[in-house]
Length: 78
Image 1: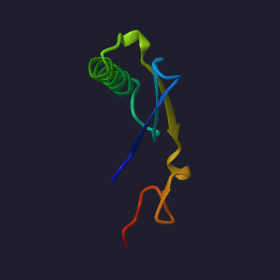
Image 2: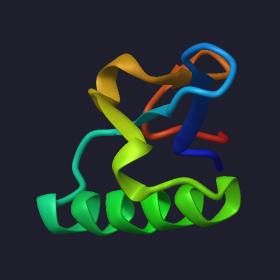
Image 3: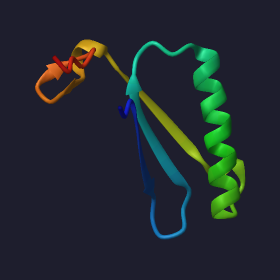
């Protein structure tokens, strides 16, 4: 089950990457900060750029507003 979607955009040809992360609401601030640090480190390392060049935007989706297969969260397989 995919609960996080990451989309990456580059502003221009070589400008900084902008990551837009959509995920279900409910994670703690500590969890989100940990993810931000780890994703920033991975992007900087893999693209050979400075951490300060990585922008991350998190959009939390209310569970009632996320549906899969015509069913809202929690996805029922019944």
